[in-house]
Image 1 (cartoon, rainbow, N blue to C red):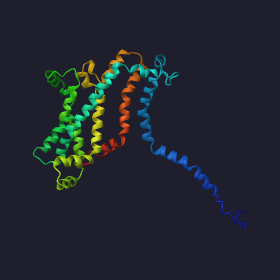
Image 2 (cartoon, one colour):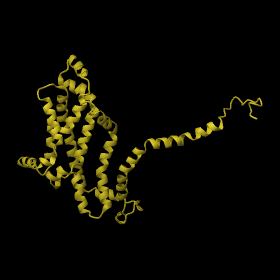
Image 3 (cartoon, rainbow, N blue to C red):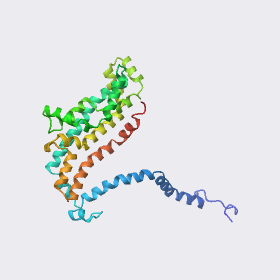
Length: 299
């Protein structure tokens, strides 16, 4: 018989839960974990698939020469000195050239592309649709098609052998960035800019103080796109840059040829090249994803 049937009541200070409820409470956390894994199974599989090469690169980079050639997956001896060995004067020069190319290229792209995208999104002028079609056409044109005539042009200006033939054209805008920025700017209501004009602001002031602060996600997205493109660009520097002006993308290929079978040093140099890009992406991940999500909502 139970305590209630016998007329006995539990003491006021005790609140004993039924055994079935206690078992349910004890199994809640594992059930939640299994539910989370089931709902995110595809994302977990994709994360493992993308992180596996980076993990393999790191484990190979901290192996000795014998271990890297043996096919072992886990280092028995951690050779952290490989990173110091690859940080030679050439690697530092390649890093400086890459930072120059990516930094100036991104800054020049923003200075030139933002006003053009604002004009295509806000102004009504004759030939606006034709200008937008030309921008889309430039997006579809591969750079390899115009490499020969452009090389002749830069050779006449005596700028070949450096990275300037790749940096200076960004002062005239980037078609992909202009299109993405334009697609985002058309989603911002015109009432904000109209209110700024009523308060006495000119078109440039309204753009700088009202519209562009609202377009920060899109600006950050195109800036990261351009930075990553310049950081990873291989074809352009291979055509124009001489050995003293090579960026990391071309320098790593040279490093690989010099260290033919030293896979640990090659992986260490590659990891040092990829690491800054990964850090920049994770620091700007929120605004980057927001910009990519919002850009292109309205045509």
